[in-house]
Length: 119
Image (tube, rainbow, N blue to C red; front, side):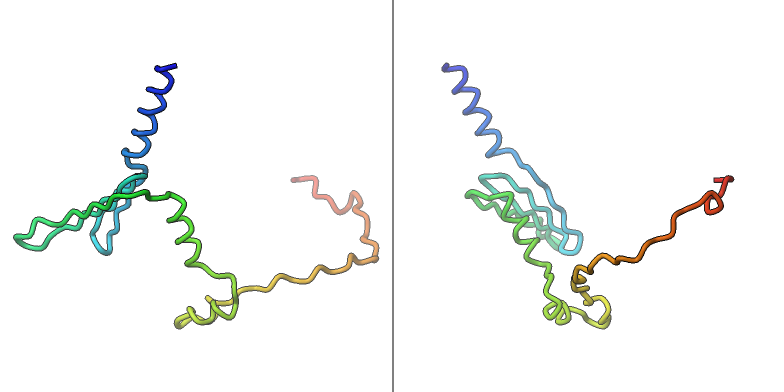
């Protein structure tokens, strides 16, 4: 039983300390390393400055980033118009069409003349 608890403890420690994502931002020229218990951001320096490494400790949920990215998008047509810069058609969000009643009209049946034998 001690071996089981030892294995579980080592696994939990590894999961908390080892990074699960590395993100490089080309615009800001930064590299961010994410782990469950810490986060590190490396920013390069200019000239003689060697750069900067910021480390923050604490629980970092992987789901928090997913929620933040999901909140960036909207399905509201009135709000989408606010973010359409010079292209108003980019903000066009089609409203779902109402369900139409099925038509009672009979469709013509396919005959042998309708089929192409070369296909």
